Length: 239
Ligand SMILES: [Zn+2]
Image (cartoon, rainbow, N blue to C red; front, side, top):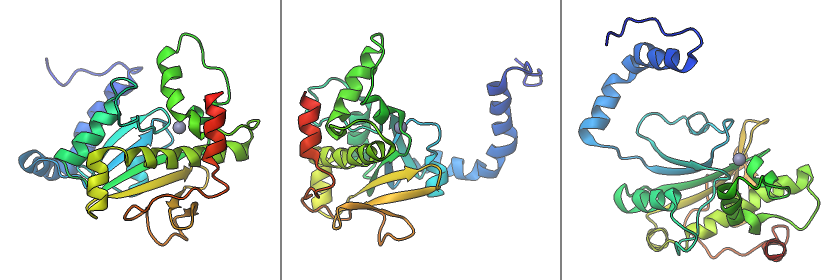
């Protein structure tokens, strides 16, 4: 097979693959060589929603080898007990912490999240996996009618819920308590281009321009602030 054949004009993906090889890869050839020879040593596990508007490399300015990324619908962390089935995300958490020994775990939700919105509506019957998956986020839903404000709060509550779930993974808790791993809860507001960082001391999300740090730092037992009201959400989720 020769590489000189013209790609069909309507095959945009093939054109992009060629473009990567000719235009982008040469600039990073040595970096990729290094990453192959020395292996990857990413500092951060990034758990983000699959939404196409959330672009981890743009948000963090990271390049090749810096982020170990797992994305799923809603940026959810499955319960550590494994009772809810086999989950690639749980496997990624174990691998990132035990093998790669990442220093940071970011959970990144975002504004206008379709997954969080879906908690307030109907999911097609055929979407059996999606329905079961979203059940893991029901605790974050509020017992109110959907509004922009309710959606924003749900998105942020979901991020906090995933941080709590992360702490139930033994290897995560152990390393966090040893000061070797830091958790970060982020909510990205697409239209503002700004990440709001969960501040565990203040119990709220703070815009990055005002935040004193990028995450929760060494974990402290999380005390639920009034506005978060996970209790009400939990009750609603059980209904
Ligand atoms: Zn989303």
